[in-house]
Image (cartoon, one colour):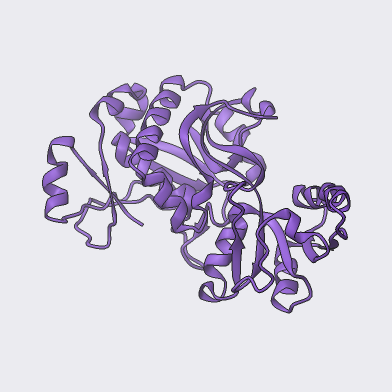
Length: 315
């Protein structure tokens, strides 16, 4: 998915003739990309907002770059385009490119170990982090958050969903795989009492060291479903065996997943003007459907928020 950045006055003409200009991406090193060039594969047009560009901190306007820390790989949010390659892709990366197009600057991503992201921002080496970060009150003491999605736990089932599993209640009496010592394991364990209260057998919970082990058990029919994070479930359903291995069970009562929490873009507290500009730009991307399309590309349309909230932690 590529993005084009065009002045408001030129937008209608560009769209009318289907011409597109790709926002040149930044490599893993964060170095500026090359000049924009025509590319018919671009499928989302993002208009540059001159007012938002003017609202950016002077240093960022002059540099033309927002320095972004991200933990790679963490599918579907941040991934390398291929083994041995430094180029990046993923939900957060795509969103960064769209925000950059809207703000008229580059969002230059640099792979950073997860536990080093917050210290690096505090030390001034990065301006923001985009790495599927849960917005919680502890992190809000250190960074400001602009929230763009809500995600919790999802249910991964075999292709075609032969057992017609849709909700957590449908897991009562079933054999369910889950990674040990995770929030998903806690969710399943807590739901056992709901099964009993409804007169059903509790789930037979099978724990595994890794999500990939649980998915292997689902492939072989040893479990009827796997409970993982909603984004991971959606990505596995979309990509494993070309989308033919698994399905994502969609509970209409929990479109973002169970026990969903806000995820956000973390911004240095030293850059309140950047926080404000990102929030306004993000709201425009929500209103025009860009964010929803990015999430849908990675199989998790349901996690997209409709309001760009700030520091909206629920725990």
